[in-house]
Image 1 (cartoon, helix red, strand yellow):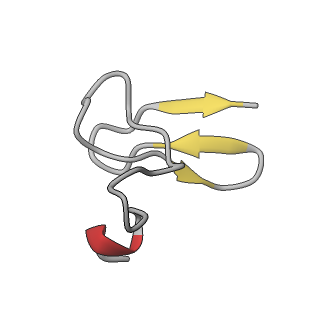
Image 2: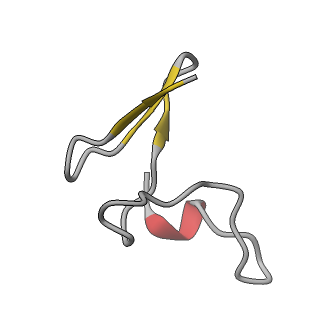
Length: 44
């Protein structure tokens, strides 16, 4: 997924950024959120 697909036309996004990295988005896997850059995982 390209970065331009993550943002709306006004520059906002619904995706949550990684609290550890700060510059990567968390991937939503249904039961968890995962950062592919640093490996941070938050289970819901």
